Every structure is written in structure tokens, then in C-alpha cells.
Image (cartoon, rainbow, N blue to C red; front, side):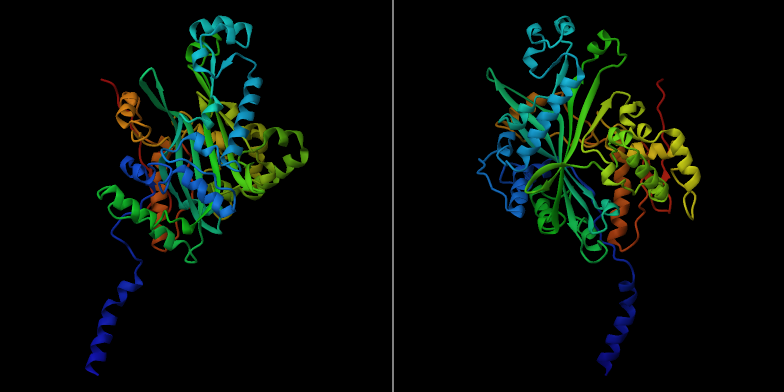
Length: 493
């Protein structure tokens, strides 16, 4: 009897602990970008997170043919053997580049050694401009099947917050790879990375506990302090466990055309250089990769040509102002494009990066906001027609990637020197050509929001689903509304 009384006392004493939300000692992680850790996860084709390994998993899940791939670093020539997936993407990109260059109507060049070759000029003006190497530089799609091209894991991104757009899953996990190269000529190694990223997107299966279990997996101990090989195993047995993941899509962002600054000066276009970025998403359909719709990126030409689509867009906007204000909306797929081209410089000010300005216009946007309002609360973002257009434009692919980005990208990844045939030669080749930060100002601010989101979900709390402007500064998210940190500009003395 005495034993039972003591046991009851102990239960009563410690029971408040069980009533509280759990809090683990390790902080939530939302980004894996440590170079030594990435080198363990992606060292060669047999590594757990090599791009070849991911395509093998995708092919196995879909019962697609498995090509025999040689050992060694992940080369583009290895990936091109995945005929139903990677090769399909490469073919689409090649066709798109042909169409883009034809539409430019100016001189262009893919072969770097022909930059000054007057005989290779496509226009009469090009024969003169090439005397100084002034020609539009176009991405050579041969890299997509070259043994000199390498795909390197640049980062792993926790996007559990994406569950706000897909309630059937617990958000997304993204593996981001960057195209690089290693070329040996005349006994010397030339190596670098290109403005070209591949984002392999997987969805977390629903855990049946409002995603609390999945979020808790991201409390990984010792991620910066412990041996990278040990941490890699923790990750692969925890948040990177593929038994929890379902492949969703492959997203590509690539600079396909660059206009040198002197060419812009000679052509009197008033830009200090320009660039065009190609964005597409590929998903599995009928056993192969096919282009799919781009989230919240309108097919402007199709909408302008079809009064029924114009009405569909206007009706959607009028009926979903609250979601648009919050940033957790998606326009109907029938209104979306399957390709986006973004332009820099002066990105967010350029009409090409503001597609909704063309699709609905300022007057129509003002009428929609005036008629709709935000039920039950004051709007945080969409307070006018201009606010509606800004929210819509910055939610499109081109609008977001030209807002507080780094040369059209939000994540280029850390510099890695562990690829290719000779690590020392690679390091020497990259000397003086390094990134200071792996991500854009937008991602820098976003990491704070995402950490708060995952932290709250792991504790069984409701997260804040509001999406700020992509150019907003970092904020504290402890209260109901984000408290933005002040921005300071240092004066030169």
C-alpha cells in the first residue's frame, strides 16, 4: 500500500512536465550548407545524396530502367543515361534555347573560343561588335551531357513551411545541386561553377500528428561541432530518411544568355550588362519527365487572348484576397505558364518580371481590392491595387527571383573544392573566384521565419503562415506579427 502511495505521489509530482510542450536541447535546423558535411553526403556517384543516387531512387520508385553508371564524381554524362527523366529535361532545355536565340534576333555565341571569330557572327552588326568580343553569350547545352560537367550538392533546404500549400503532406525537402566543370587543357586544370541550379524537390509524407514528428526530426545535435561523417548518418537516419519522402518535381534555374556590359554600351541600351534566366519545373507524367505548371506564374499571352481566362483570373483574385494578402495562395493551374524567363539588371522594375501588371493592370487591381476587402481583419500586404499587384508579381517565378536575389538566384550554395580528379588543382583553379555567402538577402531573412515555423510545429503549436515581401528584412516572429529589424546603411567617412 505504501508503495502505491509513493508511486501516486511521484506521478502527481512529475505530471506537469508531461502537460507542457516538449522542447529538445538541439535547435531546429532549416539549412544544411556546411561544405565538409556536403562532401560526405555527395562525394561520388555511390554517395547517399549524389544526384545519380536521387535519380536511381526516382527510377526505382517508378519502375523505370536503371542505367549502368560508372564510379566517380557525378558527371553530366552519367545523368544523361537516365533517358526517361534527366535526358527529357535536357532535350526540352536545348529546344528552348534554340527558340530563345532565334527570337533575340541579334548575334550570339555558345562556343567561348569563337567569341572573337568574325566568321561565326549571325548578323552583319556582329561582325563589327565581335572585334571586341561583344556578343551575347549563350549557355551551351552540350554541358548537360558532357563528361567535363559536374553536378555538386550545394545545400539541403528544409521547407516544411510549404505544407501551407499542400495540406496532404508535411512540407518539402529540397536538394540543390549546382553545375560546375573541370577541364584539363595543356596540362592545366580549369574549373568553376556555372549560374545553373537543379532543385530536386521531395514531399514529406503526412505523419498523422500534424507534422510534429517530421518537424522534430530537424532538431539535429552537433551539426556544426561533431565529425561530418557522424552527423551525416544522423541526418540520413532522421530528416533525410528517404522512406519518409515522395519525389515531387525537379526545378531548374539557369542563366541562358548574358549580354556583356560593353555590348550594352555599344548598342546604347543603357544597361551595365544584362542576363536572361530560364526557369522550368519537370514532374513525372506517363513514365517520363515533362514540363509542369509554374506556381503563381501567369501565362500572360494565353490570358490576354482569352476573355474567359481573364474573367477566371479576376474572379479568383476577388474571391481569394485573404489568402493572397497572407501569401498562401495559388492561382488556378489553367492560368499558369510552364516556362518563365526573368531578366536582370534592374530586375524588379522591369515589366518582364512583373507579369500580373500585364495580365490584369492597375485599374482592375484597384477595383478588385476595393470590392473585396479582407474579411475579419485589416490587410497586412494587400491594402491597394498596387499592393495586390506587388504581392502577385513577387509570388511569380520571375518576380521572386529578381527580388533581393543574387544574380537571379536565391541559393547558389557554398564553394566546394572536393570535386574532380585533383582537389588541389581544383582549389588552385578556383582561387579568387569564391562566394562570400551561399544565399541571397531574401533567403537570409527567410531562414529566421522558417526556423520559427518549424520550431512551432515541432512543439505542437500553430505556426505563423504569413509570407513577407521577398525584399523584406529579417524579422522577429515571436509575436503574432513579424517585427522587422531596422536596416542601417554605413556612411563612408
